[in-house]
Amino acid sequence: ALRVGGDFFFDPQPGDSPVKLVLIAGGVGINPLFSMLLHIADLHGYQEGKGNGYKMGTVKLYYSAKNTSELLFKKNILGLMNAFPGKITCRFHVTQQSSQICKELQPHVTGK
Image (cartoon, rainbow, N blue to C red; front, side, top):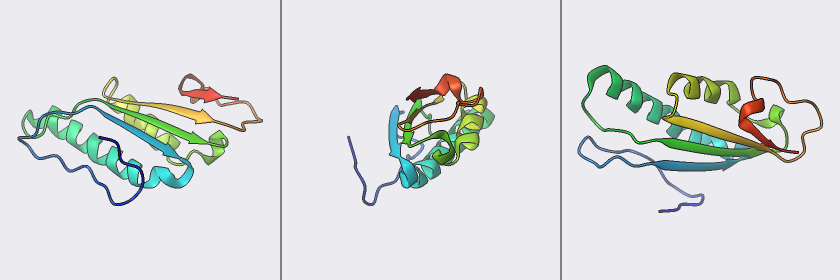
């Protein structure tokens, strides 16, 4: 299913089938998706610690902004990718980057 804007949420129940999610955000539109990403990280952490409950699938976040300084929560997102390698991934896209991209972000950024 594809949802654009509006009132949406991700609240799987323990008996639900695992799903793979693709989250797409631009600019400040990351806010609700970042909340979902934190919830997903909690589900992965709970699953690793207890082994029961909802079995979370993989999550891919695509996030675009004018430049890397406008990518909100980028350090937090990188931290989640490092904490859950292969389970949470992100591709940042910048459209008007004029300065060099820092080494930490380089492998995850496409654009100008």
